[in-house]
Amino acid sequence: MHFDSGDTAWVLGSAALVLFMTPGLALFYGGMVRSKNVLAMMVQNLGTIAVVSVVWALVSYSLAFGPDAGGGFIGSLRLAGLAHPNAPVPGLHLTVPPLAFCAFQMMFAVITAALLTGTGADRMRFHGFLLFAAIWSIVVYAPIAHWVFSPEGWLYKRGVLDFAGGNVVEIDSGASALALAFVLGRRRGWPRDVMAPHSLPLTVVGAGILWFGWFGFNAGSALAAGTLSSQAFVSTQLAACTGLLGWLVVEKWRTGHATTLGAASGAVAGLVAITPACGFVNSMAAMLIGLLGGITGVLAVSVKFRFRYDDSLDVVGVHGACGVVGTLLVGVLAQQGAGGHLFAQQALAVVVTMAWAFGLTYVVAQLVERTVGLRVSPEIEIEGLDTAIHAESAYDFGNVRAGRIGG
Amino acid sequence: MRLVTAVVKPFKLDDVKQALHELGIAGMTVSEVQGHGRQRGHTEVYRGAEYVVDFLPKVRLEVVVDDDMAERVVDTIVEAARTGQIGDGKVWTTGVADLVRIRTGERGPDAL
Image (cartoon, rainbow over all chains, first blue to last red; front, side):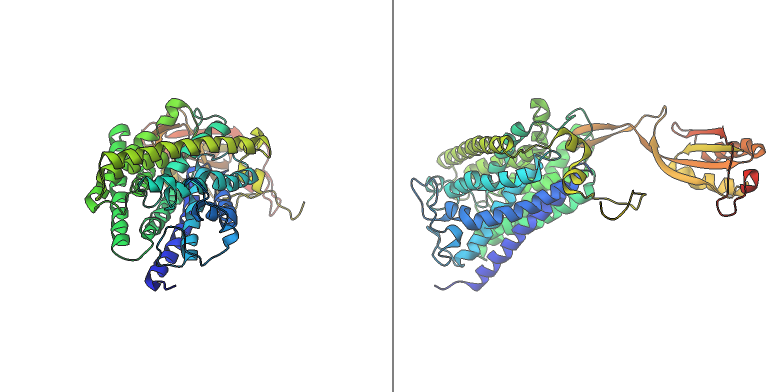
């Protein structure tokens, strides 16, 4: 087999960029929680990297991209344990080694599971969440990745277009977050008590890392270095910018203030919306999709107050809602194949992904909650997860602290 | 001896400190505190959700002085800390029964 070294370098580099998004997410979310829970948020993200990467190598890569086990529903276990590492990925004509593709997709599985830490902020048990993430990436993520990303998947075969994970990552995580929010219940005192972000500078740095990593996510999804990855790269940048502007304009109009958190959130909303579309649309369409993503996001984050579910850091509002908008707009704005038929396929993918992700996540979360426990005790929630679970605190300003070594 | 305690706007601390130095006051203790009187807090907005923040940052300044100085110290602080706007703060005094300089063991007004 002969591989293109430029393509391989780009895909491996992109895999590293996508990995970097998860520590970026830890900062993005860590800044938004209260100061007593910032370390818990961050270690949940780090733990997710570890657990999902291992599970990916053991089974979920094979379930997602292994030879179809029947009906385009799930892959077989032929590649479990990364067996046959040099065998071609079924249906894909890659110019990069299959393991480079596997590594790239591994990072997608990681960030998608990590997004769920945002909805469970301030109240999830560490080991409970890691167990949840392991099961979730097998029963929720892997099948949806197979349906949409694998050429042998049933939605792929119907012509559904998802360039970099509008379905597989964004709608999947958004719908799963909604189910997780229902199982976990609201934080104590929400929405009555103030639960404002404790450090927006952390959030801004995190948003910057996400934005940076998204170039690997989107342009890397071309799986080659060339014309297509360049268009995806430009579309990604333009959509992030129009998303940011769209969010700020609506926010200024509604509340009278253009906020830092709004700018960071708007960029992410634009990036989410362009994710399924970035390789299928031209630059002007990318700007429109990003703008509509930003506007959708700023309106969608208010919905939780009306329906009283505590999607703490707006995974449903940003990733779910903007993912749906981007996915549907592919049906309207794709340079090839746009029209009623494609739109219907995209809508089908949205509905099926939401139903599977919501239903299965609800079951898995209930299972974990009723066995090892997913929500912390009221005492721990009030004290804060950092000291109560992890025996650390994020900020020590040199104040007087009772100190002695040992117990 | 009397303990003079003042809660003032943070940006007025330098003016108050300077005025007290000119009065011959040798030392003071300052801490960053939060609170409100008639001036209420402000509103913050995060992703469209409005939060009313009740407590505002203030500086609390404490200085122990001899009885005959107390009134002048209070007047000096009031003059230096006043902006005329709501939220300027308060000054009050309390009696101090005893005082010791730790280094030398001096007691009472000698330790001031």
